[in-house]
Image (cartoon, rainbow, N blue to C red; front, side):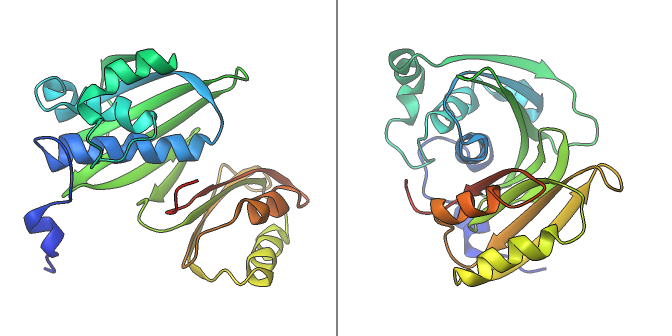
Length: 223
């Protein structure tokens, strides 16, 4: 079994627990980027260990901090409730049971300013590492450690080739590509991890392709 030094020492962070604090902050931070539009409300549905210990381990403050765009090493993490009040972000916590999910899992439901509802479910899997497992009902696997393109499209022939062509034209190398679909010819989700950050202009070009419903990018650089 390979063990990383980060599994032993843990990440650079603020808070008592790499799983319950650092991982929680990264989960909400990544979910914020996935949603990609302004929102004014988020409900955190906590499963398993998250539901049992979120007060004591600061999971609640970490989740709100991430939703505000703060990373796990931010000194402002412990002040997240006050910051949310200042920014007009409404939040709440509910305990829930998510069958088959990791013990440290949260389902985040965002209410966007335009009225849309977006759901992101993710797990804190140890050492500050995370895994996003569901976006708006589609099963995915996103670590948040690499620039990632998330495309929702109609399951039509040639769509994947068109997306790849745009990335190739803009010198963005594909590291990993995964496709899930609800059914043949139905709605599909393409997850592409890349070696390079994905500029907003590239996301826009992909969103304009035939049969594309939406395109979003998680970048490692700050916007």
